Image (cartoon, rainbow, N blue to C red; front, top):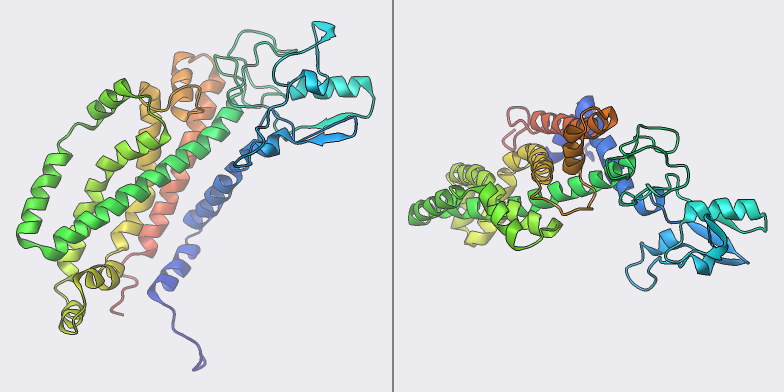
Length: 369
């Protein structure tokens, strides 16, 4: 028997408890969250720069200094670290240090200097064609050094997939956040005020929705080199339309209820009624469709990169790897691993979406119960 001091659970708390009982969606959510948070540590987990370098008692950390917002650049000249050219051991190398080779040279010298490399010491944009021990023409099959092989330009596939994962998820989250903010505002305004505002607003939305999305991206790509933020802005300008229709319908339904009339009678402002009273009761379509919108965002970026209108090379991109797989269909690792990573990520997001939809089902929990 519950004690009198126990507070009743809110609707959100009951929905969250229901969501955690749906094991497929709950474990997908936990796994995807952990992987995404770990992706922000890519510079210290998957990188060709050393975590620590000790030479003559002096310590440096090229990889960690990459994470600093200002100050150090993480750039160290090869001659400053005493790295020699393997083809001419009597000469020092010029340019940035190659830390994998530097580690081998320090170990061979046995003078107490050492290099600590990241767990996976390869960078996604690093060309490995001139690396010692690299044999054969790219793409090369997976081996002990390169877990998922190399692509047709001699770059490590695993490193590009790991960095591409963070870019894809971040892109999708930004697109969903910006587009939902615009769509919620537009839909709430049209549904709450109605009348001429609704009629005129709906016609403008329909005109905007008729603009061809792909042609717009092609035109913009021909004028400027699109980066992550430009693509987020372009997609957000089109993705808000769908959610605005749902929010308009929710506000049309909710504004006819008694609690809205009560809020009006006590003198609440329109903004307070819209965003303090109606919006919390109209969030079900927002939360329910958000995971599926993330799937659409990831798919859109992969499609644009595959068509050549997305992020510019050499940015690590799943779409670019998928294109390489189709161009090198005999290289099984370029087909299996990029498509497998894309399939696994989208599958987990869909599982999360199904669980959220079931947990937020108004027939199970509602504010009227």
